[in-house]
Amino acid sequence: MGLKGIVAGALAAAALAQPASAGEQKLGDYLAGRAAQRQNDWVAASSAMTRALSVAPPDSDLRHNTLLLAIAAGDIATAARIAATTPPGSTDSPIASLTLAVEKLGKGDVAGASKATDAMPSAGVTHLARPLLAARFAAARGDLRAARAALDPMFEIDPTKDLGELEAARLDDKLSPVRAIARGLSEYAGFLAAQEQLDPSLLLSRLSLHLVPNEPSALVRAAEALARQGRPAEALALFDKVPAKDFWATTASRGAVDCLHALKRSGEARARAEAAVKANPKDVDARLKLGDLLRKQKSYAEAAAAYDTALAMLPADSPRRWIVLYARGASRERIGDWDAAEADLLQSLSLKPETPTLLNFIGFAWAERGMNLTRARELLERAVKLAPDDGAIADSLGWTLYRQGEFGGAVLELERAAALQPSDGVINDHLGDAYWRVGRTREAEFQWVRAVHLATDPVTARSIEAKLQQGLAAADLSR
Image 1 (cartoon, rainbow, N blue to C red):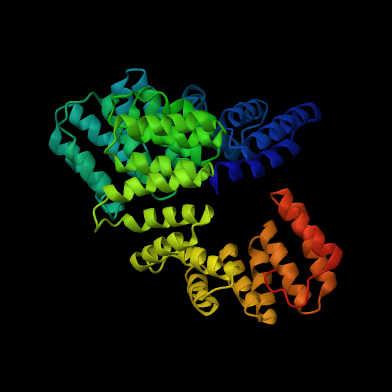
Image 2: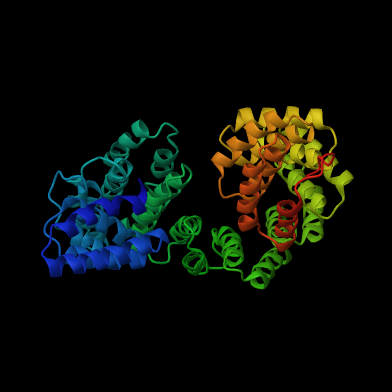
């Protein structure tokens, strides 16, 4: 359900169960917390929910949810206080036990942390965390055989066995339990992030940072999770803590570029990307990051030039060539160099023929130009089969049918696109055009009104307003 969804039900119910004054306080904290959650602002959400918990009667759901928010906010001291009130065997017992073990270890109480680990239930996030901690405590005692045996559950749970093998290889690295467990929790966070489990990845990263506040891998993992949760300022602050000469510095630098762009600090983003290229002129990834940034900033000619250099650096058989050709083709299309763009895109397609977004880009570009409509339709029908729930692809297929004069089929496909992405102005505009062509003029006008309100630029809005005034010319199938 995620950190945003798990809080609402418990707090709403608890607020209703209070006397008026306590209930009003809880309701105020609840509303503040919910507003913060909608923005993924874990610090504000944690603060509000902790206040709500302080005036609430015992409530397991509220306690569990507030515990998670405190960890996500990096407030492990508050999380540990909440965890200490958790009854054994409750639903939040696993994460509470892990929090207490980490908190004890952070205070230097290795024996207490080891004891808490032994009592830790194996469920949820602790399925892999418990053996990780137990192995490290055994290694710290000098018992490598017991340490390796403690890792056995990791191999049983993780089908890839990657995390277990990594930890097994590091058992004799002579790190202290604090540093070793901090690094292990960070690796676990990366394992979860690769599976798109951002919330637990953030929790484990925060626990790692509680143990070693400057652990570079954990700084990067937490920052990456926050960035993907729409918190670029907080993510940037963590990326910028990674030392410049650390192994993780390159990853942090590229993450910082994305955060600066998201914060609309375009000049700083570009300066950092260019500095990375200057510092490592043979680093193809630095060139690609610069190209991607320039494309996002709509500096398409410069982006294409960056991709030129990157392609020249990549081996002819590199599996990455298709995506760079795609990016360069998209950039060239934007500057009006269609012949070169088409060549790039078709070469990319030959290398990666079952990529829905690439099929869609080529098919829609052809349809917009009124060229190769039969082939465009074939590509888009393939794309729809590969990504049936993508509204943009459904729109492209519908628009191609429209350009072929198959208005009935266009209506059906564009209606499906509008259902998938109702707030897309282009889709609503296209659907309005298709309705007009089949004589459903009132519905066409309704869609055009929606499209005007959803238009992202004044030129598009004016062209739609003209259709509202004049309708569509009978012979013009370009609109």
